[in-house]
Length: 185
Image 1: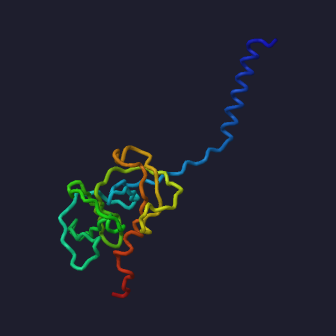
Image 2 (image 1 turned 135 degrees about the vertical axis):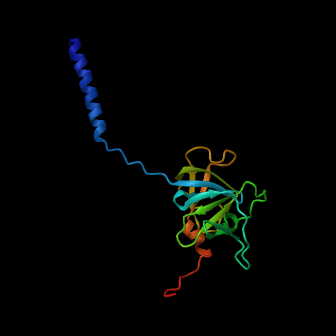
Image 3 (image 1 turned 180 degrees about the horizontal axis):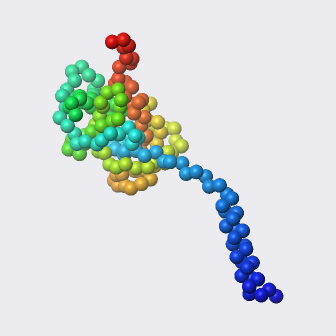
């Protein structure tokens, strides 16, 4: 029969060995989840990469652009520059939500070439999303939707599903920008 001290030492040795073995197992590095601004447009929810967002603004009065694309809402002035406003729903080929314009927001983008804002029905919150493995685009024919994600933090819109369509801003704006810049001018 072992003494009390031997049993205690044996228990401590076993615990030490288990702890030492746990340290030897390399923990997988946690992959950073994409952060997006969750917003709605045309009865759908979208995630705009937070690195593409400069500011969320209340809607502004816009000057119309004659003969412009239907998704181009117009222009407004900000810090001495004209900002083009694009309706996100129309740009994606969605039917705009028929609600009042009271709750709408303009999402001013960090875009180097031209000052651009997206008109959305509502900007909810910044959230982390876990990308989903699906390849469907929920009926959207736009190549600007790169996939879907599950909202992880907060309640971006408690009355809606927690899945968002993830947007690629470069692809979204491609059709609204000049196809090439003229060099030497």
